Image (cartoon, rainbow, N blue to C red; front, top):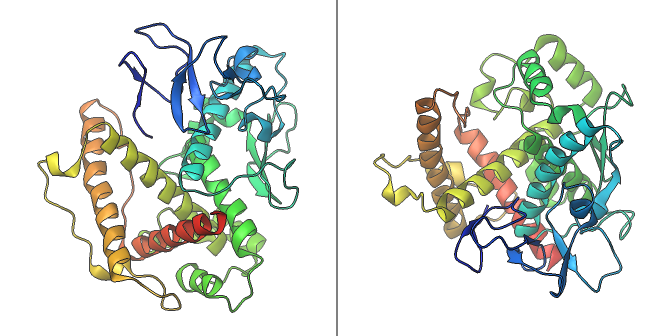
Length: 353
């Protein structure tokens, strides 16, 4: 996340509604990717979900006939707002969703809504298990469904412990499911012999392994011993599609975390830590793709900066009596999967431009 500054010089945050120094109304303008001050006379207006529900601080042109910002327009289903608890949980959901959209658009990936593009567009269903006990978080044909109850910290942590996960966050859900959406949008239609599909298979394995059987086996027996050497999470070991989704989610986590640290002035050159040295092969693309020494090196430097910064974040967390903020180990195979995710991001950005 970048650093935002009000016109008065005060620091603003991605979720800010008002500057605490000059007391101006502020909001996020997706067209300029900045936090802006605005008044009733300005060219911008607040999203109706911010005005009426207090769950959105994004802006849109005052001349627009739309009442909802581009992020809220992607909502296909929202919770029953007659229950105040639902409104609170939905607000947390919307913040996580907007952070995902911020990161993806920052990568240059176009995100049409389902209304704009029924085939390749994206939509969100935020559904509570209270109203629909069968709901599960997942993706299908461009629609990302997230269980509203996951916004309840107690509910989510119980699930985390039962599933043996190191971390479980709302933003992590959205990042993970965005990987399934991007797979279907950009990779599933490619010919089997396309280098991008072959590269996926070389890094993640055969995606046509029986998905249902693989997940059933995972939940019955868990990941094989030593999964940490090949996968970023135990769940990633369940199936190539889930390996990809966990890797992409992790790539976005690093991207956002590193941007936040560096924009706030926390940089590797200021740290009293030895530089993490990954072997050169950690930055290699699959053999079916053309590698660039310059791009491989830039990726490795980027990843090594994060590995140093995450060490500092963990030590700060421990100093506060909390668990590690970043409970992950990046092995060489995991780094190589992240390298492919980084390559896909560039390819998709170029496809958009």
